[in-house]
Length: 132
Image (cartoon, one colour):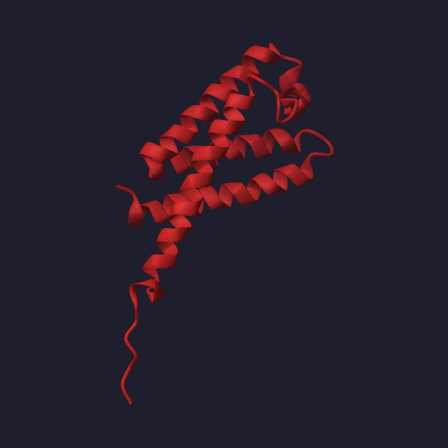
């Protein structure tokens, strides 16, 4: 009995590369879109996602716009330097989670962002194999 030949699509590399590309696409597009929306508030009203301890001690609009610039930069970093960018996005998501945990009633969003943080770490890991 002979061992059947495996195609390139059946090797572990093909699914891993596909996962890498999906994650990279998501972590380029989402931060850029969310960052740009910090200037327009079309997706949501971003200031409501600031913990009171933050919102009560800073000028909100300039802070939100600064967050937007950082998010756009993070998305571009994921595009050009995926390993570094994915780690930056993961750290950023950790800060977002801490902020959300300080707002009663936003725990579900914090949990969702924990899933995104884990996906960003997976992208960082996969980028060791596939990043240029």
